[in-house]
Image (cartoon, rainbow, N blue to C red):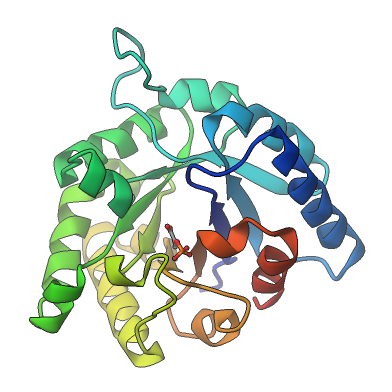
Length: 249
Ligand code: PEP
């Protein structure tokens, strides 16, 4: 089965209107160079989501949100619903990023409800999972991730597109990554679990790797079996770096 890889940039709490220059530069690189072999998504802060979605449209750059509320609307000051993100031009939304799980106490149950809300609004949720360093050191990485997958992925993933992002927490923003063998083992385990639960749909679900993916290591990581793209933080902020990662597909 061929799965078109997807490279998503998570800008986190970085980016002003002036960052549109980076989108324009990336758009230029994507349209003048060899056609990308991956879907390209940028998840900017919500303040510039609409502008990024509009600026990227002609060059095939897709836009995504970084989080959404579980509810469709209501008294939730400061929050954004999935349909608001869709209205602003998003096609994807990251849910359950480890920074939100840690800083906002998001449980698997909440993440699952967010993924359901995203699907309900016609978005494709990028559902993040990943172990801490001590969980890996204790030999529990696969068990932790398996339980996050069970708890965070809604049953609706059997009929709708979801994307899984495996992001070892200790690799995010640290410059450290698991070995290719460790990444391969985890992605294979996630694939087995997805196939067991969702059959064919699980076999075609994209599993992204995230955590210090850089221009230098992208090629070897993207070459690993069952790595169907990447979720890129720091290296997605500069068009040239992000383009090098996209070109590594
Ligand atoms: C992330 O936060 O999703 C991420 C992968 O960050 P970085 O690439 O900077 O490690």
